[in-house]
Image 1 (tube, rainbow, N blue to C red):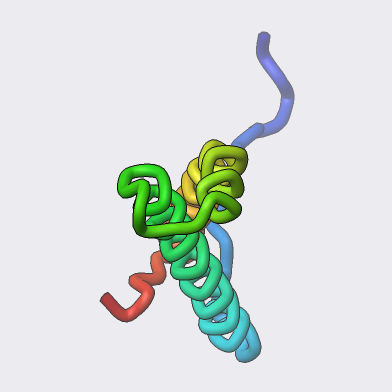
Image 2: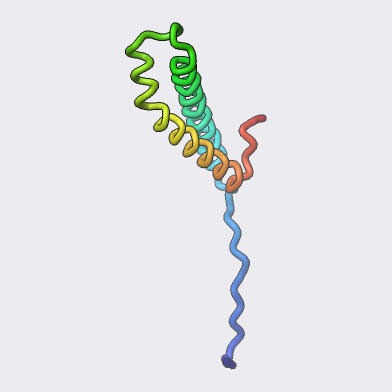
Length: 95
């Protein structure tokens, strides 16, 4: 199809140079890191409670058995969110 005018689509790239954006990146990285640490601790406690029978009480083992799948799902979602955050913003979380 021949158009009488030039149709060009410009390259679109996000501009993260706003002065407040650096602060948002730091706050978001702290929240993601804190949530990942909490979920990791929950995963360790649940795994240890299920693996070693004498380590935890029956109530903790029941909680771990009922919720370990949800903890895995939360860990996967937080890992994906932090990976997307690092990829989109090119932020290295200080590692």
